Image 1: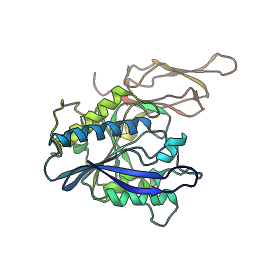
Image 2: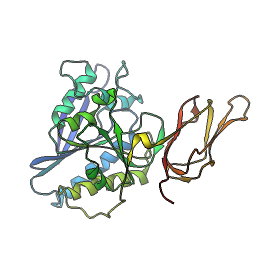
Image 3: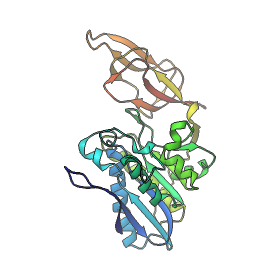
Image 4: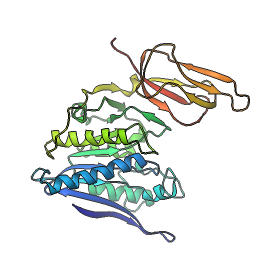
Length: 311
């Protein structure tokens, strides 16, 4: 293993921010795994740290296949991670909306450009990311539909679901979209946690990455076969929105099977304590995403459901 400084940002009041990449094996640029670009992706950073640890052990045991090289970037936005903010800098910019970046742009664009120029030639790209909304989701692989996506390869991670989303204008500035445009097979991996470490979910994500690298002939690693993934279109998920705001008391959990009419959550009046709304399941299905904050506003997304196709 050797470490590389991909980008260094000098700051006047704290130590320099350095984006580091850790390399394993030698040869073809086979796979790059990149961690959080937002400041609260602690779970994603933890998974990358465990991947670095595991790949170091595999390399020392000669289990990185000949002529293959893997790079892991555990975190891009360590600045926001250190001060507990979501986005980068005083402008509050989302680095994941700056790709492919500009070498002479603002700081977030420069970071994106430096990272992208270093990783754009890898055959496979795996980004550990999180929903932009506060909540938990079933572990899954997500891909942007831009003509280059390959859901068959996504099945090789062995996670329960693969979600293909239609590209929106904002997605054209994301890492996943730009990676795919450079002929990299790019995947975004989501777990059930963001700001807190969920060890069980982290182990599942780590196993999925190692399973994929094994199946692509990049490493030698013994792992179980995982799930036969179900491929979904994001537009086919059933969105459940609130009719009013208040204190959110969740009843249905991520991954739970529910039936039409089941009580999924209650919204409590923050002043009087009475139930303002009971959120009922609009269909039979599986809870794919669930709001996790204590407060919720009127019209906010409370749940995404995977409609049950078969009994």
